[in-house]
Image (cartoon, rainbow, N blue to C red; front, side, top):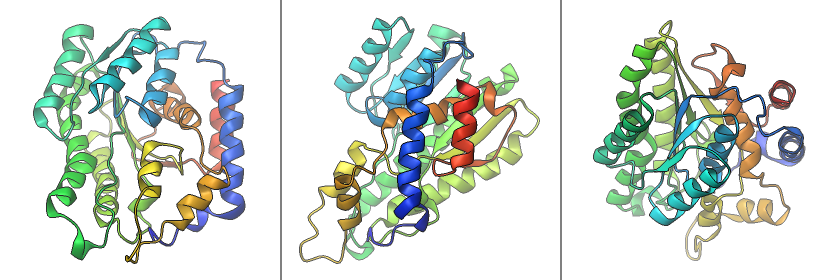
Length: 295
């Protein structure tokens, strides 16, 4: 499939997660305690979907935002929306696969706000979705560059700043595809697996520095990536996207805002000094902890 979905996301667990996450989102105050007041956050892929929702949550908690995405219109609109809500938010349109864009993002944060406290590596692409033997090499390489090399480049640029501050929170938005092979998604799976082990290594390297890195598995979220998967023409191929169509039809995809609450917890003081850990949106006990501590 995109064939065999992990058991953790089928049946009752998926339904439980959906309603648990909705409960979190519905019962949280808009970060009224402002626990991130004065902190500066960079969120990639923040023109829409999970990234935009995370940016909004962090802004509500008091953070100043640098938003970035490939679509200039989307990211400018997202930043403007946050400013209308009273937040300090700047848009830096561009493709994070380009090192020059990464440098511009970090330079903008430092020039405008003089620090970087939070980095959320969220930008991702799913293409190519076809068997490896048919995959376009350039598309395959672009996937790896966007999903793995770009987070490395961003970390490499912000880490000296964070270490000098003796404080920083890095969050990688990963996927179950890191440990569950999906037929036809070799690049995406390889990139996410690489991202996970990169986080483990970095956690060792930054231990005791005041900087931490953690990873979020958001589950199946109602985003443009899900739409992309459902749009694949599987005629005369061995790809099977039926699970994704069925999950959408059953209303099992969770809202980006629900995931944003979990991300906010991970980059805020609530996660304390946890480092090199992996958090899954299907973990009902953790989701309940987030609900309780952010309320």
